[in-house]
Length: 61
Image (cartoon, rainbow, N blue to C red; front, top):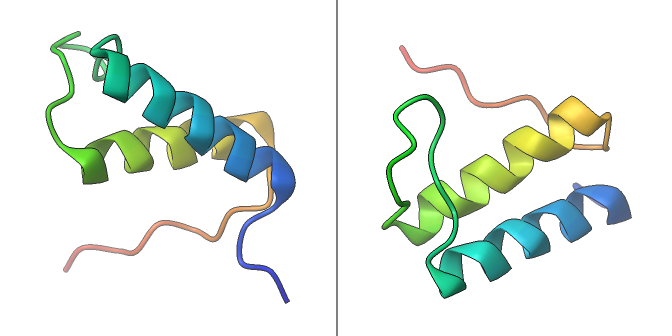
């Protein structure tokens, strides 16, 4: 069974494209994203908001 849906994959792909071009900005601060992992996290977060099949984020203890 797939962990992520096609819609989620597309959203992450778009976020990575923006990241590679230096156009991806983070939440409230609007600062440029410098980390690849952060770019993926932003893509997954946007996918969740769109209603794509994405597992819930891990809880930090």
